[in-house]
Image 1 (cartoon, rainbow, N blue to C red):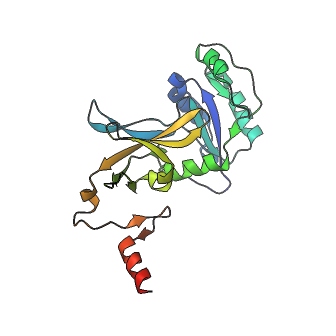
Image 2: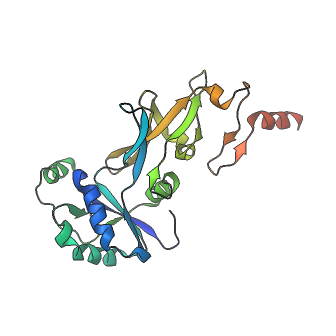
Image 3: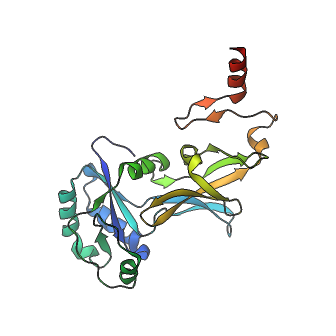
Length: 225
């Protein structure tokens, strides 16, 4: 989703209204200037035994645009009549939990002058894990007999070192990364090693840039050298 001159900004809204707000704001947003979107993540639905999608960051809308902060703010002011009850532009400082609770219960939030631009790390995360449709797809990998996890497919290939917990039953991975107050969770299916290594040999390891490295071949060359 990376485009030259574009950057990400974030808006806070009510979780139960975020889809409605995304549609309302997107309908008015100039298509040539970017998009307002709701990042989604693929997850496994045990009740239906299939993958589905849900918001990656509940309660947040994202703007990917070349608009400056003031121009974006003016656009949001123009739309306030449509979304006044549900939309809150985030200030630079995060809200504490008590203030969030008041807002969740329907009380008003104080005004702010501008939406918040994402940090370089946050922007890089979105560019890495989201596909062209704004969805974080399911990843997949396997565990060694010693418990070591190897991610073979999907956006978590680039964030394998940040995985701190895996719920194999729910097909979910928990990362030691946060967005604001939200812990980042990603879909991860743990398959038998034989799925990737049918002949019993180690499979090539994929680097973050997609390059595959055959560890056995590398070891052989190092010993020959």
